Image (tube, rainbow, N blue to C red; front, top):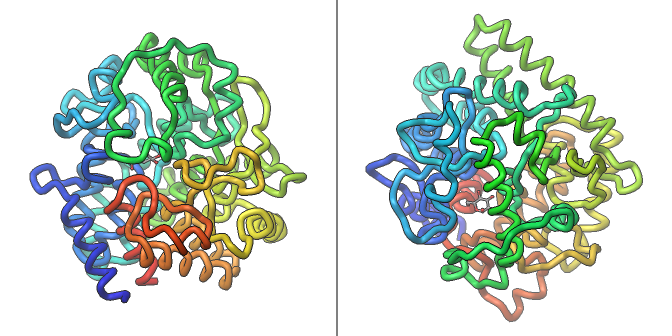
Length: 437
Ligand code: GLC
């Protein structure tokens, strides 16, 4: 079975690859442009069989970087009327530093590029060639981290904010529900496109979209100025997934700069950011009672006391102590690891907000599983790591390379489909990495 799945996974990536522009669609029809963290995960998949495509994926992403180091969450390389909101709604060009060459959004996504470069270095057979590539690109990634710590760490605690739920990557997580209650959004008149591609019951609601658009409007009124956004955005959150990814990437950049040599000042700076971030993570974002890391709502000055798969990602970045990791993993197994459950649901299955089919409100996502797998291995939890890996492989083997999956095993006695889009690029790419490990 594995060899035919490998072929299928490679075919999905190859057919989503845009030859002329050199990047890969996350999913045909549903996501017709380039997305920041998708590109990173996709590049890891390519590294296993076509290193030039891996490089191209990273280069096309970094080409769209702004003068201030910012990298946008979507790069609109082409026209498409199958997606809303497009470039005319986002109007990222309002920001003085925006790229003049590429249309994009004015928000970002989890900064995976640092650890992706390290991963690609480890996978690539020709180390000299890949190091050459990394040398050409690594400073752009460093500049991206500088952008974050300079503009988004408003309390100087080594934790950066996100100002939009789309920046988290976990778009409609129940974690945001209480923030929506604090907002007064206009009712926008617009035509959704996502729901014409996939089952609307598996997507965010119209009401949620009103909030999403309203935050963008506030940012636009302020020309996407970071300081103004920090002051005025009704959504301002320190997200454990986003910050853990940033710290993981800091550490990866340190490792790569050591291999390259002669970059002591950057290594020192990266270490400072990491140390400060890890400390704040463990004092501010850890909830002892829940036994998990949680989000912090900076706008309303309170922790959001809910457990999601984002709560566990700090193990991927070496953030908890051994003892705390044990507590964290016990929370994962107790709440998310029941007999009928594939690991790892995206939201606490014991919470009333859990919905097994609705996007980030419960289903399993392969990219989260991938990060948790490596984190578990790092802390020596080999058995649970193997479970996450075999659960991921079993799901794609059963139903295909979907965007997300109902976590309940019994559901597949009668259902033969996953959720959201099919032939989804990062599910294919990370499968290729998992089975090669
Ligand atoms: C959805 C996901 C986001 C992903 C994008 C493209 O918006 O929530 O994480 O990057 O689709 O796949």
